[in-house]
Image 1 (tube, rainbow, N blue to C red):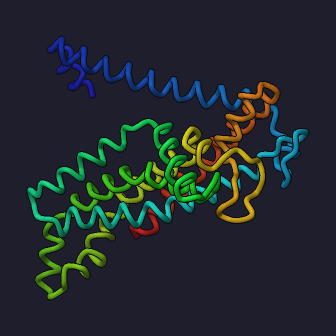
Image 2 (tube, rainbow, N blue to C red; image 1 turned 45 degrees about the horizontal axis):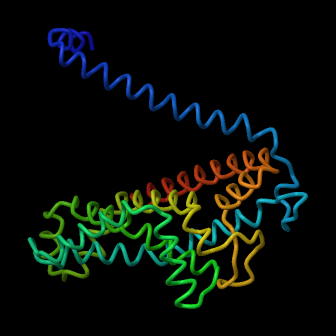
Image 3 (cartoon, helix red, strand yellow; image 1 turned 90 degrees about the vertical axis):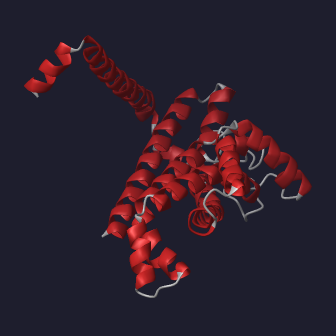
Length: 279
């Protein structure tokens, strides 16, 4: 460690870069701790049993229906987006020819879709799923919209994970007489599971925290959905509705604490599943 510091002091530019990296890391970590601490301090004192009542009323402003709707929305969106994104990535890496212009166009399109604001996805979902397909403000319309939002992320992370698997794995499988399809599903995909799950975890975070797109597609009804064509608000939409009304600011902070804990639990569970699959 001492030798490294001496090497840095010999070059002013290297010393400047080292200090810049350290300051950036400290600032990033400090901002993260400040945000989490601020949410906990403002929200934890207002967590009370009435916030977890099964039925929402204007007196208890319960978030339990929103929590259940959030879980349903995340599961439905992933059921739609993960197979499409994964199979597209498999085709682009394993079956498409190297240097294919169509492949380059698909990748460019996916990267472009990743940068589109969520409000644009919400307006598209409103026009296509809600109005044109006649789904109305429903869980299903919101799930389809969110699946389109996270599809580029899942596709690109899965593609990079599959590309990172060494070609020697495939060559050994082919040498033992296995076909391409068997090689992909028995050799390549198990080795690429950590990278694929990383994309799924990031997608879950975006789904759980999405607000703008769901206001235009799933609606803001604070009830448990009777079926997939019923309207319902997720936890982030619930928090936005409470804060925008200006009457339940404290409850909105309490909701943000629960949302933070929910995202942490989902990420922890996903990481645990990834480790189990690797073993």
